[in-house]
Image (tube, rainbow, N blue to C red; front, side, top):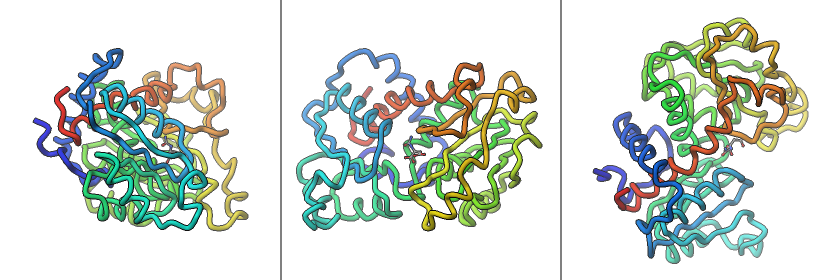
Length: 310
Ligand code: NCD
């Protein structure tokens, strides 16, 4: 059954077909039932976590997922702690990890770094985020969360809110929606943070009904899923541009008064100040559930890529 994932690199969510993602979600359901057990499916396998950029959820949930499946985990969580700090290049670092392990999860500030690593490594490479470009496993978790909350991904109205210019989680989620049939997609951001042309042109070419706007309150009554992201401070080429962008949007309980009762808010986290803290306790907040689903979805993905049977 896991045939199409076996041995495969995971670089962009657009590398996957809808049916493949549905298969992943079914396996994630199975993983959730087994999540309290220590399994031996990947016993003898080693997973490398090569995190050149900060991470809380992606790195730790991959680690928990791998360990729960019985795999060993090696890795690092900053450039300073490895020989890159002595001048070693990325290619050599990847070659080493590839020889020590069966799969590499890589996060890097440069767009294309995961693709580059996959061309060097003989074993599969999973992109844990490359610059502003892709974050495919986050998109898998995001879709799985929507499926969990609404029992379907099709037919819903989505608002993607925040830093659509530099946010890889937002871009990957938008890409992921093009594999399904959303009723409508609103891209909501101040003009300075609007979606990049490659993102909007994909929506156009795939016939997705979408609209770009800067004020969420104009459409909030229609929205089923609100996907909020932080301003990606570290990706601004010019700090004065960041100063202009920060604090330009905020989700408040007041704003949510006009929303559907069933509206759910997703956020890849970390959140900074773009969601008022009191929203965390509202019926709309689904981002902590979403984060917790990272473990079973990543368990399913590791199993499928490394060839075990859950
Ligand atoms: C995101 C990332 O690193 O792109 N975090 C995550 O993996 N959940 C989002 C972000 O940093 O804003």
